[in-house]
Image 1 (cartoon, helix red, strand yellow):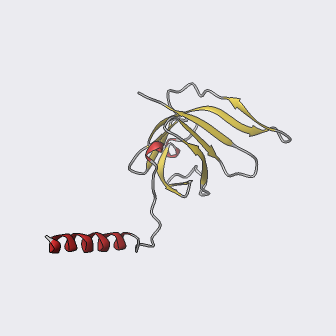
Image 2 (spheres, helix red, strand yellow):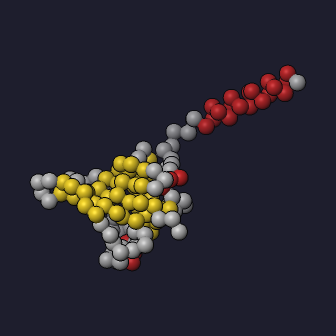
Image 3 (tube, one colour):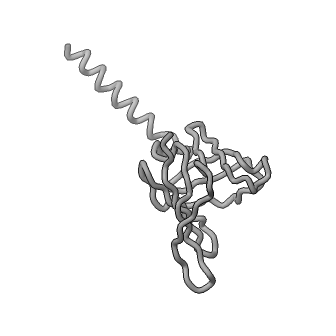
Amino acid sequence: MKNLLLILVISFMVTGCNKGSNDDPKSTIPPELIGKWKIVELYTSDGSNAYWHVYDSGRVWDKWFKSDGTYLNTDTDLPIDCMSGNYTVNNNYIQYSNSPCVPEEPVIIESLSNRELTIDGNFFEPIKTKYIKVIE
C-alpha cells in the first residue's frame, strides 16, 4: 500500500512539473468568449469628447467566436473575404489573423462575462465596442 501511494505521489509530481516546462505562449480562449455576440453600444469620440451611444446593426448577431479559433462577422458592408478569419487570445488581447481587412494589432478585452463583452480597439482615438451574448 505504501509503494502504491509513493508511486502515485511521484507520478503526480512529475506530471505537475512537466506542465510548467513549456515556454511556448499558447492561446487560451476564455470559455465565456465562445458564442455569438451582438453590438449594443459604441464608445467613440467626436474629436473633443468620448461617449457611449446605443448601436443596433439590425442583425441577429455581429460576431461569432468559435471554439476552434475561427470567427465570423456578419457585417454585409465588408467584402466576403473579410467576414471570417482566425483569432487567438493571450493576456486579454485578441489577435486576429487570416483576414485582409482586419488590422494586425491586437484588440483589448476590456471586460468579459457570460453575457457581456467590451472590446477596446486599441486605436489612437477611443473606439470601444460593447456586445451582449446572443442566446439561440
